[in-house]
Image (cartoon, rainbow, N blue to C red; front, side, top):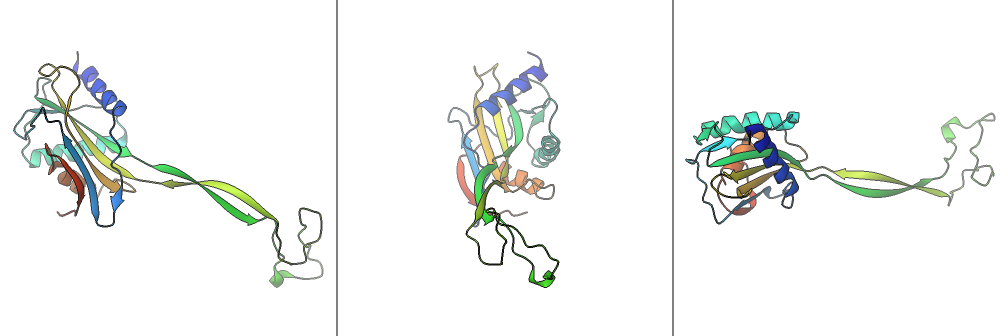
Length: 209
């Protein structure tokens, strides 16, 4: 299988088998989840091929650039051949949720006393009666959607299928980013997440440069 097709299959598999999203934050720190397949013990000295996405989103292309730089800085054994021990896939994860909100508002408005005058038309109630400024029991309910935005960075480390049958994930990790993965915070988020490479961990940590 050609490299492009292989990588596309990797990412497609990852999207179809996502574990519960990690993209949330807590007041006491940044949430990190990392899980290692007990059948593997990945290390930075193992050969790792960074995946190539087909027509990546701008945010994923930016993530690849930051990830490549950090992997080099931390001396990971990054190679370009398809016979590497592992392939590292990456994605900006979006766990945004939509909450319906119902708001009750008056069905008509009161006259503005600052503009009151003999020629000012008074609002008319739904029953066709003139509004005298008395409080009204008539209301209208409007439903709108409130979006809770959360995002994060997720990494998947796939074992070489030539050496290990099937599409096996040797390790995966995710770090929460809050409302968005900003360009300013992205290098620190990637650096922090790679600190848990090949490990099992679930908890909140402080972000230290």
